[in-house]
Length: 97
Image (cartoon, rainbow, N blue to C red; front, side, top):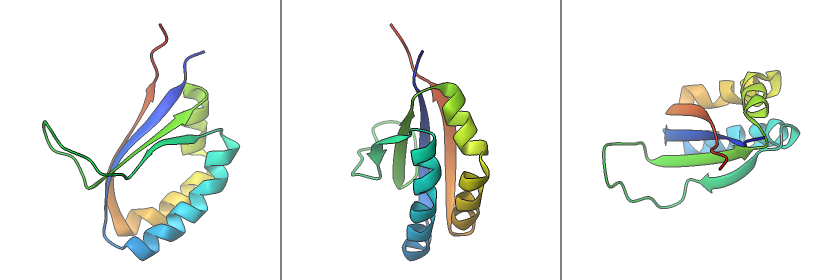
């Protein structure tokens, strides 16, 4: 079974409030088997445009990635993030050779 990924690009307006979102998302990420691959490190934009922060999470399956996003626990965390950030998020199935 192919893994799946959340790929997010985010601008954070209030870093202190964003820390509350990060604390709140820990439980749903653990519950659905997420693992951070990229978590807002330095980036070098070579083509196009993006936001200040890039985050990539790996999930054991596409179904787990979608279920995590739709879960009540993640939606509660997202409610903390929405007023203090702007972002783009895609859930994508990984490639299995």
